[in-house]
Length: 155
Image (cartoon, rainbow, N blue to C red; front, side, top):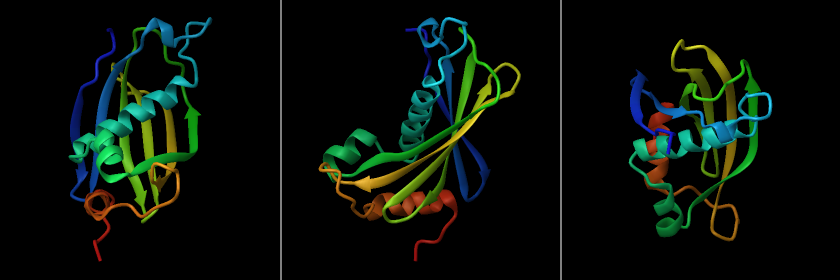
């Protein structure tokens, strides 16, 4: 597999955490013009989001299976800044922007690993739901970590 998934933690300040995941663009991810097909950016956002949760000490699969806690996408946005091509190495920078009991918002930057150029930026909004897709409150063990990540107090 030509895609590499490595993560590193980057502290912007004591209250904000960022995950950086590197992805090497595969040929299959490009369109007839040799540019990454636009929908693949959302797949990369998901990769970054799952890795950020892992960095926080959570496995998304376990959140679903053990805690009946799903974070369903209800809104997704991407602003494309520059084309991405086959074999480019992309850094997916993911940050937790906002958390409430039933709503979570993440932001993303895609950057060219070679020169740091901004390729795209985006945001996803999620509702917290159970397996039947009924809204529910985010379990406290996640809320504590998420609040710390966005710099809000736990009171």
